[in-house]
Image (tube, rainbow, N blue to C red):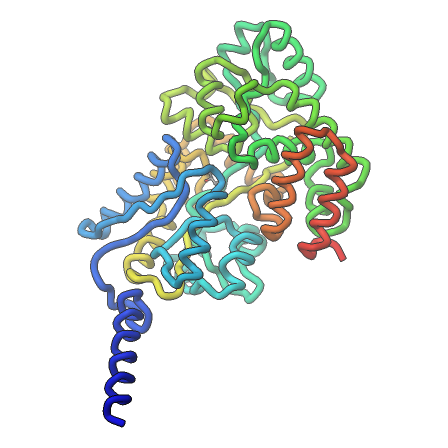
Amino acid sequence: MFGKLRVLRLVVLVFVAIMASRGYGVRGAQADDKLEVFSYWTSGGEAAALNALFDSYKKVNAKTEIINAVVAGGAGTNAQAVLQTRLQGKNPPDTWQSHPSAELQGLYIDPGYLEPVTDLYKSEGWDKVLPKSLIGNLLTSKDGQIYTVLTGVHRYNSLWYNKKLLDSNGITIGKTLSMTDFIADSDKLKVAGVDALCLGDKDIWTSGAVFEMTLLGAIGPDKFLDLYSGKLAFDDPSVKKAMDTYGKLLGYDNSDHAALSWDQAVKKLIEGKCAFNVMGDWAYGEFVNAKQKDNVDFGWVNFPGTEGAFDIVADGFVLPKGALHRDNAVTWLKVIGSKDAQEAFNPLKGSIPVRSDVDRTKFGPYHNWSLDSFAKDTLVPSGIQGLAAPSSFTQALYDGSTQFSVEKDSDAFAKALVAAAKDAGITK
Ligand code: GAL
């Protein structure tokens, strides 16, 4: 009898020790002064911007040891897999980066991994300086709570170009660029032996993004939203037509595209080895990091046809249940939502701050252009980056656009998306 009790007591003690070491049951009482920040921000521009956030944190908590837990791979495709393993093993980082909306809901809120941070929006006064549209449409979860603090909002539908390379080929880009002109310019470059499209699709989402922008440009923001609310079918003739245009654009890419990451493709553009790049404005972070000047070395224009739309890819950090260093995680969230941190981080990252009270003079021409677009254009959450639909649909977009790049079969691509939209609950 006593033997059994002793064993039981031992089991309980070991269990309590393990749980305590993971922060369970001792919330607020931190084991040590550390903060593990999990992200996939490893490119030159991303790392510089992340460091700016660490510096902001250090101003408040200088003694904390920040563990920069990064998993390389743009858009987080690799990081997500590592994170899922940790979450299932009840070993969460103290905070991690994620896109809001569908991705956050499906991967982290629904399985119960997160604590809401709604109270912070009141205590920090964010509810007064963040656009209501953002809070209502993008940040508020199904249960009416908010589970993320945004560092900024990226704009996806910008087309970047090497200004000097285009100048030397007699190509000038105006305020807008039509698809017809884009294709004509690309043909001209081809004749001159220059690859028009800088692509790095080692990570498959980048060619998928070329498809998303082509689609958005072809059908416009309202119909794009209709696709994701199930009002327009993914095999609509207008969608298939966009697929064919996407196929045509791929014909202008660099032959080593499959070996390059997204930031290596931007580097190729900077080096003048190819002309245009379809990339969210995290590409801007690479230009800044390489000391390139807005409108001198590089330029940008709306991806053809996407004027009037702002394809959103926002980034935020979360507060997990069972964070080992919960107090530090909360401080981190307060810091990244602050005016100072938003003003320090976003010029380096390429995204715009989410707060309306930032000093716009601290931002250059690109940011001011993007801020204006955010204020007046139709906001559409990105599908390829997981904001618009559950991850199963994002995966179908990855797979479909990759397969299409080889087979150029728009019927098959459209059929796959229709099936995936049904599976993901976008359509009935
Ligand atoms: C996106 C993310 C951006 C940027 C990009 C490339 O998913 O929102 O912040 O880092 O991937 O890694």
